[in-house]
Length: 208
Image 1 (cartoon, helix red, strand yellow):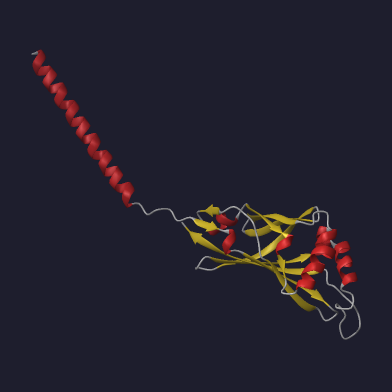
Image 2 (tube, one colour; image 1 turned 135 degrees about the vertical axis):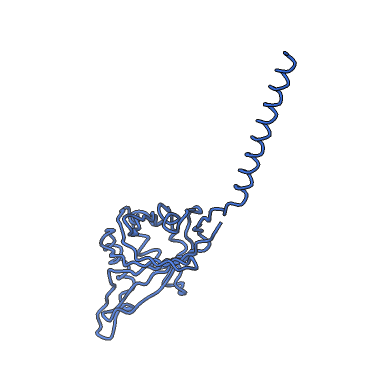
């Protein structure tokens, strides 16, 4: 009788184990057929930062860019999540306008007289459906509202207009206007450097 009980117990254990393994194999099969999660990734090598300043009473545009923007790859399940919380820094040394003389004046007489003449830093924030860049320049941190468009091809365009007074940079602007006084004169003979700077950032969110 004891042998008979032992045989039944052994058989039950074998059946239970077989069922468990079958279930486990089925679950593994389901996991293998799951669609992998798509992550959107913002990368610095896919990012460009362009700016437009203005001179003369007629508001003649002067364009340039920063050829380097530094940040760690930022991932997210959505484009908004990939951009939200992205911390960046821009070295002033990467300023480029296709005119070496102008570049030197901007670096020395504008950024060079600021509290921190080497870097512009900031963080992109996505709050309540709106984008903001919290930017630190000249020792001042201020929020800059962004207009953002994201295409189906995952191309991102951010635009904004900085008012230099919001970063206490009017002194730096005056310093620049002194060294560019004659160059910033228009047909009316008035030398003027505008307080606003248009910003355009372009990037591409890769998939992983």
